[in-house]
Length: 300
Image (tube, rainbow, N blue to C red; front, side, top):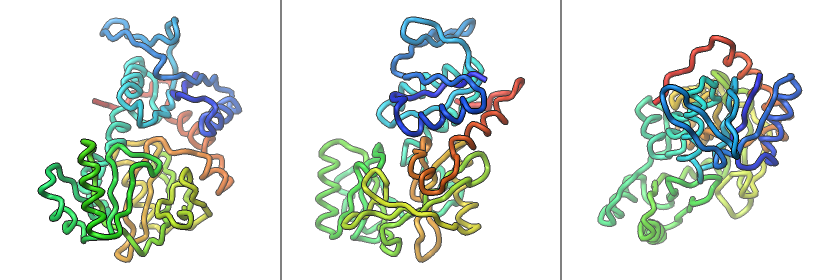
């Protein structure tokens, strides 16, 4: 098969591993910068052009689209979908997942347990918003944040009011969320492919931080997850329409809570921690789904 990886940087670990896994199985793998693509949008002969030439059709496309280019990156992915390529995560599912507020509303609607979360626009609502999530300490998150960027722990009510007002002064959209103290700076990253959790690791924040992201200096180890956590991770990914997802779960006193669902999970931490060939599992899934005659899932 011909498979395209949509990524701005082919030297990243995840892109290199996906290319290696695909080529090891005899596929042609091309890494394409979505920002260098341009499109002919018409009903008769839609096409994607790249650096001065029209691209041939691809059997499948693996989107590795960062938050900074979500709008244009998903537009390019939609064009490949129009051409009949199987997307490993549809454009509509990616835009759903990358909007933290929208994704949490969808997950909550389906009965998936989450940390208590508040959202408001008016500065007049700050005091009640803080009470809504149980008071300080609490976590303030940028809706558009990623990899722990734009996430602040406010230890006191005064600090919470100051952080919320400061973000609002920047016209930023923020979520206010209860702080799960008993998690002790740990979360569980579940890697979902299709309808199963193929790997899971526990991530521990570095000393003095509460964010467990490996990009922020956190550490990781193998972990055994419960049947409830496994079912929750799969349901969260399927609810957002994702074929591949990194589902982050907090172990709270009242049970597991989904903290976030990532539509483009990094492979380095989870492969190196578990020793599993996650990239190969993803290529195997594409082989199963992008068969001749496979009908594209409906998007919008």
